[in-house]
Every structure is written in C-alpha cells, then in structure tokens.
Length: 375
Ligand code: NAD
Image 1 (cartoon, protein in one colour):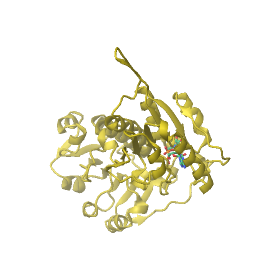
Image 2 (image 1 turned 30 degrees about the vertical axis):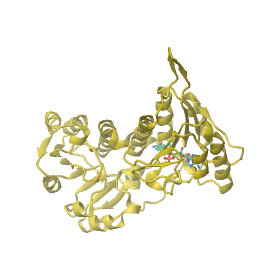
Image 3 (image 1 turned 180 degrees about the horizontal axis):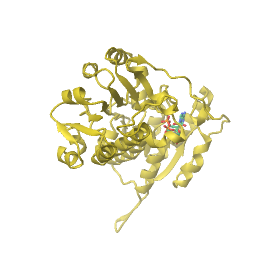
Image 4 (image 1 turned 135 degrees about the vertical axis):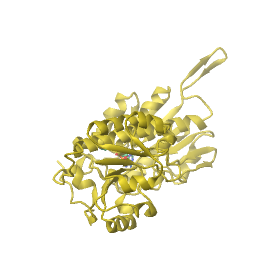
C-alpha cells in the first residue's frame, strides 16, 4: 500500500502532514511513502531528509493522486484538487465537513473515502491522535510570542542599575488546551498571569501552572455533556465581562481562547474594555477564525484601537511550522497505527474514533455520525 503526502496549497499554510520520523514508521509498517516535491520545504524539511527516511520524492501532486492508496494532507483539498481523487482512495486531513458540503459532493462523485481529523471524538483513548489539541497547544504558545513581539515592554520583571520594572500582567480568557499553553508560556517569560474559564475543573490546572484562577460572582456551571464547555447564560457572560473590564486598567496582555465546540465564539471583550486598557496593551484573539472573542478582531490582521493592538492571526500554527508539522504528523502516525500495517489495513467502523471521523466511505455519505455515547 502506498501513502502519499501532498504539499499544502492554502494561503499561509506552512505545515506538512508527514515528517521524516513518521515516514520511517510507515516504511517499517510495510507502506511505500511518496512525498510531493517540496511538501516540507516551508516547515524547513527539504526533500533530502524524506529521502533519507525512506520516501520517494515525486515531482508533482498528480503522481500522489494517481499512485497513492492513502493521501495525507493538513487542510481540506480545494474543489479542483478533489477532482483528482480516485475510487477507493482514502484521504486523511482536516476536513470541516459542516462547512464543506460542496467538497463532500465532489469527493462522493469520485467515490473516495474521507477521514476528517477535525471530527476525532474528544475521548481519552483518542488523545494521541487528536490534531486539534496538539495544534491548539502550539497556537497558545505562539500567541504569547506574538504578544511579546508587539508589546513594547518586557514580560518579566527587570532589575538594572538604572532601576527596576514590574512584570507584565497577562489575562488568559478560556483555559482549555490553548489557554493552558499560553499560561505556561507567559509564566516562562516571567509575566504575572491570571486566567478565567467557565469550567470549574480547570481551576486546579491554572493554579498548577503558577497563575491565578479568577472567579465571577455568579453561580452557573460551565460543564456541558462529556466535560465540554456549554453556552453560558447572558447574565453569566455579563458578569464575566464586568470582571474583565474591572481588570482592564491593570492588564497589559489579554489572550482569548474561549470557544464552544461547533459554535461561534462568544464575544467577551467589548470596546469599553479596550477603552479601559493602557496605551501599548495587546490583545491576541485565538478565536478569530470562529468570529473572535473580541468585538474588534479582524481575522489575519492587527487592528489598533485606543492604543491597544488586537491580533487576529489565524495561522499561529504555521508561524511555528516545524514543530506544528512534527506534532500533526505524529498524531496521524498514531492514527495509521490504529488502522494497521500495510497488509492488514482496515477502517473499523465499530471503533468510535473512525465512526465519528468518517465523512465518506467509497463515495457513500457517512456524515454526520450517530451521536457519541458519553460516559
Ligand atoms: P475549546 O477550544 O473548545 O475551548 C477553549 C476553552 O474555552 C474551554 O476550556 C472552554 O471551557 C472555554 N470557554 C468557553 N466559553 C467560555 C467563556 N464564556 N468564558 C471563558 N471560557 C470559556 O476547548 P479545548 O481546549 O479543545 O478543550 C477543552 C477541554 O476538553 C480540555 O480540558 C481538554 O483537555 C479536553 N479535551 C479532551 C480531548 C480528549 O480527551 N481527546 C480532546 C480535546 C480536548
């Protein structure tokens, strides 16, 4: 069986779906691996390192589409790319089926099989294959780097012969995977960090990282089914926004990561909070792609309002392409490990992981999946 790895074509996408270490694993499992010329170039992985790992470099995407049984990608293929898919070919990538009905039709007509990496269930057994978590951790880390880059001061306290300065005050809103990574990175740089999340369970994790867990004076549980966040009442959101606004005059950096799976991100940072912040402060909005937690965020831009810079980059993982590709590829390799060696490959739809992530099976529509039974 052949695994083919495509070069990404989406704007600003620098990641690649296989790295030399995962190529070695596939070769050991009996797969032949084809890499499109320059697929890893933007992640600083030249063709030569893939060749050393046992892959064959092919000149263009057309050889990948014609020869491979399994096609690996980071982003969904474009409609034009999808027309190259062959009957029975298995495509594994981020797919966002709810947002891509046309793409589903195109690939159904080609009789392809699609496994959507974004539809992996959030169950403990699936942690090792969960690209959304590995990439969220990188986004959280990178958000701090972006903030530090535009913030005109140091994050950590400075002590010099000419005097001393206080550490920056960082507020992290939403302490899921990305938020916790942001807390850790900001603490590493020496900032004072406080964080808020609607899920009570996260408080301990926030404190373990040396940050202060904030509370609102409003009783409402933030736990949805299966440990996911739920949509909070307008009264709770109002109480939360009051807390943030009260903290605003003393907050230098705000990193927002609040999200509800499958929904638009809640608006939590309004103009009046930005008006209360000091000149030179920074907001990094990790929810920019799903509407933004800050009402002034513009996706992929830095907007300045009242001296506050609001960063809405949606390509934070591609700003760390080597590390992001490394984790992304390892998640996929774990998934291929569950699918089996080349001579025993099987998509087992009795397994919740595959039943939830399969969009098409030989052209037959399998999405949306039946609801997952949660413990
Ligand atoms: P996410 O990206 O969906 O949301 C980010 C955070 O925003 C969450 O912690 C959520 O509680 C918070 N949030 C939502 N509304 C908010 C509001 N109004 N104000 C403040 N915060 C708000 O979450 P995520 O990072 O993908 O994951 C959340 C949890 O799920 C984590 O504890 C993670 O460990 C767990 N998880 C488990 C698996 C798995 O077991 N395979 C996979 C992914 C995530």
